[in-house]
Image (tube, rainbow, N blue to C red; front, side, top):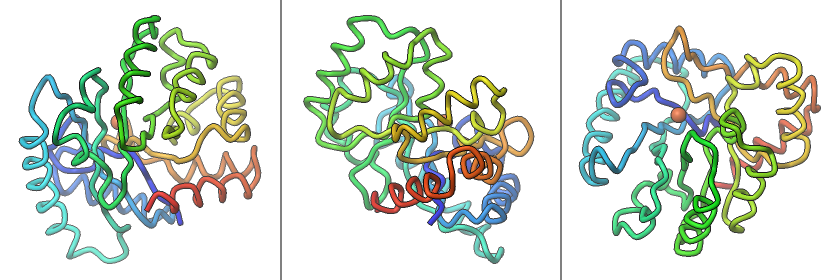
Length: 236
Ligand SMILES: [Fe+2]
């Protein structure tokens, strides 16, 4: 089963889809790639709104999308989640668990786009010690672009037993040869458990699941891609 674990397809919810028309076209691309299930993960920034307000806004956007999707055949199944920006007291919020991907105990977590300083590792360890949910680290490859080494990423990844890593399909599809080889090494080394398109729109950030699958199968083998599919299925 192919699952897109990271997407900004909910209409007018964040910097993603501009409306239901664009959302439906994005879903058609994913259907064409053979994706069975799309997790809708709009950005959640605690500094901008509380969890309850976010969930209400998300429910309204989801309702609009479902209405529009009803008329179209063959689209992937949809479920709700969020891309939650990390802040140290996050896991103490009484509504924190409501940010889990629906019917799972997994939360997609986005880390700061900066070099991780020593106190960040401490904050993150404290967070993981308190956190009862399982964490999916969003677009784990991206943090390397901010001056972090693969070792820094591994240090985060090994903070708790409850962490798995998600890689962006666009990173795989658009990388030059050197970067692509590095990403494939992360996949074949077993570090990546799930994929996400992180699709925001139809032009600059479209869903590139199909191209990413082709590259993974070619470079790492079909069995590796199937392992990723199985990891995703086990979350539900
Ligand atoms: Fe995202």
